[in-house]
Length: 459
Image 1 (cartoon, one colour):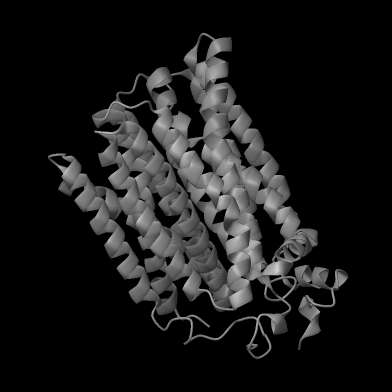
Image 2 (cartoon, rainbow, N blue to C red; image 1 turned 180 degrees about the horizontal axis):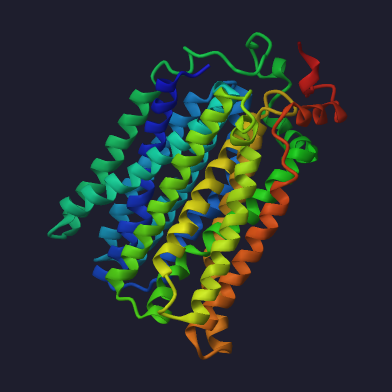
C-alpha cells in the first residue's frame, strides 16, 4: 500500500507530465499564432490531434494489465512525451524557414505527445487505484492533481522568464530543457516505488507469464468488451464523457463572454480566469480534507456523508450547473451582475466535482474482473479525451451559432451556458447511479470466460 510519501512521488510524476503538456499546448500555441502569424486553426488542430491519439488509452492500460507492472509503461510514456515535447519545439522553429516541413514534424510530435500522455497517465492512475487504500483515494486524487496544476504554473512561469527576449534558439533550448528535466524527475520519483508496495486488492502470486493471468495481446478486444459489459464500468464511461464535455466546453468561451458582455480588457479577463482556477484549487482542497476527515470519523453522524466520493461528485455537478445558470443570469443582467464571485463559485464547484470524479474512478478501477485496472482507466481516459476534443468545438461552435441568432452578446453566451448547465445536470443524474462500494464487484461474476477469470475466481 502506498504511503503518503509514495502518493507525493506519483504526484511528482504527474507534475512532470503536466510540465511538458502545458509547454506544448500553451507556449507553442502562442508562438505559432503571434510570432509566426500562422492561422489559429493550426495549433487548434494539433491539440485536437493529441486528444484523438489518446483514444489509444484502453490499449495502453491493457498493456500494463498484461505486464502486471505499471512503472515500465509510465517511464516509456514519459520518454515518448519528452521526445514529443522537444520535437514540437523543433517543428515550430523549422516552420520559420520551411512551413510545410515544420507542420509535418509538428503532427508527428503532437502524436507522440498524445501517445506519451496515454501510456504514462493511464498507467499512473491504474497504479494509484491498485496501491492506495480506499480511505485515502479522495485525498490522493487531490494531491496528484494539485501537483499537476503546480507543474502547469511552475513551467509557465519559468519558461516565460527564460523565453524573453524571444528567439527560436531560446525556444528550442527551453523546450528541450523542460522535457529532459521532466523525464528525469519522473524516473527518479518512480525508482523502486512499485516494488516496495503491495496491492490493496488481494491477488494471487504474480504469474510468470501473461498467459497465466488470462491476459494476452490477442485477447485485448475480448477483455475490452468484457469491461464494457460490466454495468458500473459502462455507466461510469458515459458519466465521464458527459461531465467532461460540460467541463471542457466552458473553458474557451468564459473570457470572450467577459469581454463581450462585461467590457473587460484582455488583462481583466485573464485575471478572471485566475479567479476561476483559484476556486478550482479551493474546491479540490476542501473535498480532499472532507473525505479524509470523514474516513477517519465514520462513527460521527456526518462521517459517511463527508467520506462519500459519489456524494461529492453529485454535489459538484449540481453546483456547477447552478453556477452556470448564474452565468446565464449574468448575461441577461449585464455589468451590474457580480461576475467574479460567480466565476469563483463555478471554480469551487468544478474542483469539488473533479476530485469526486477522480476519486470515484480510482475506487471503481479495481471493482469487477481482476487485473483490469489499466483497461478500465484506459476506457475512461479515452472517454475524457474524446470529450475534451469535442468540448472546445461544442463551446465555440455553439457560441458562434448563438451570436448569429441573437444580436446581444450577453444573450448569445447565456444560451451556451444554459446548454452546459443542462449537461452538468445530466451528469449529476448519472452520478446518482455510481456505486463505489463492494456492491459493484459482483458484476464480474456475470460474465465468466474460460481464459479470462472473474473477480470472484480467487480468494
